Length: 160
Ligand code: ADP
Image 1 (tube, rainbow, N blue to C red):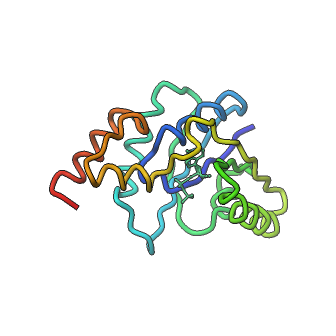
Image 2: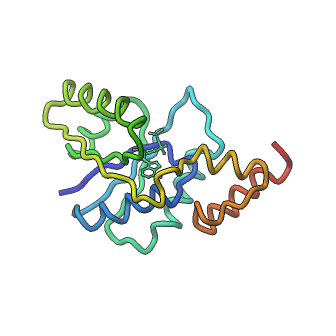
């Protein structure tokens, strides 16, 4: 049984990687699906995000990296996979996630969303927080792997 892990991953953090590693042990395969949102430009391009995901998950054998645009349910149907995983950090994540999970299941009845609790050491961590700290040249080595740290330093080299 495979699972789709959708998200922005702009960029991938240790919090995402924790979810990916744990899912790779529970499921036969993990399809990391980077949302290509035309309306929301990220710091990193989708290609850059995919590249960083590839480098940081290269030692996990059952991981596949892909991107999608449009509705997640349409992508899940196309992939023939009716399992979604999302990470939950705090109560604040819950309301939005529950709404999405219920809407998605309404559209695609077989679709189930699994929620994985964040590990305590990553509960405060988000791509936005890491970008904010990096933009002020703060230390980010404890939040992201080295390749991501280098990529962030490079992005903010010329100033914000
Ligand atoms: P999105 O814009 O879809 O929320 P993100 O890249 O921010 O994309 O997050 C993708 C998924 O990873 C979401 O389910 C989010 O809750 C989860 N996630 C992000 N950071 C963490 C973390 N530190 N611990 C656990 N889950 C996380």
